[in-house]
Image 1: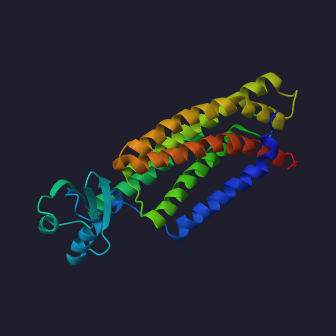
Image 2: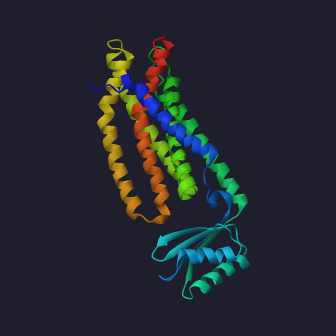
Image 3: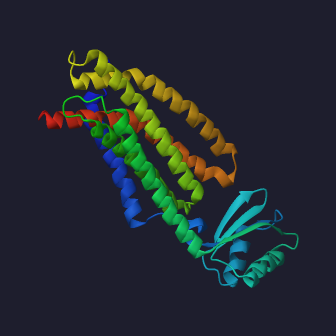
Length: 299
């Protein structure tokens, strides 16, 4: 039988290495917050095929917008993100596009003030903390009768919580790297993706934990706790991988063909799904064994 739990230190080392890189980028460079959190204005313009990004950037710079964020969305469409605009400034940018390309037209315009952006940031943080809290309480209650020596109900909850932190930090680290090298911003869709990832990850972890609990009922005392966990993880391995693979394949299709507006939302889901599958198999369950061996002085 494949020995996952016995090799847990290898998986711990891999996770620590990935988290170290991600945390380094998070601490040094941070995340690039979009206008949902910082406030600002976004416009989309349709232009002729002859219009270039260099022309657009030059015209905006001449209006006093240094380093404007310009994205090419395809079909000769540009998305411009700058600081919050007044009505006169908005009109001036439209006129600038008319100067570059007389047939250009504005497709959409949205503006968010810094107060609303700050409020969204606070609410997003509160929602994430609330999700973590309820998950720990739920798992502790669900596995209240699954104790094995020092592995009390709260240990199951903490193990799941650490796996969730692992997944959260992996996604944040990836987007810190993307923000540094590719100027990728995070918005409210990114928070939605994080919540979805946390839900998927804890669901996968609970499936594995439930199999461990069932095996404890049947074989408790007949085999070591380490063997019980290892057999349970291996028995759910194919199910976990198959579920994740089919989900990721659909997400990859959306990433390739779903359009610019949801690209990074889908990318966050893909990274989170992969990390969530990994953590439920190679992090959460091994942590139970590490706690057990530590408390029984076998670690």
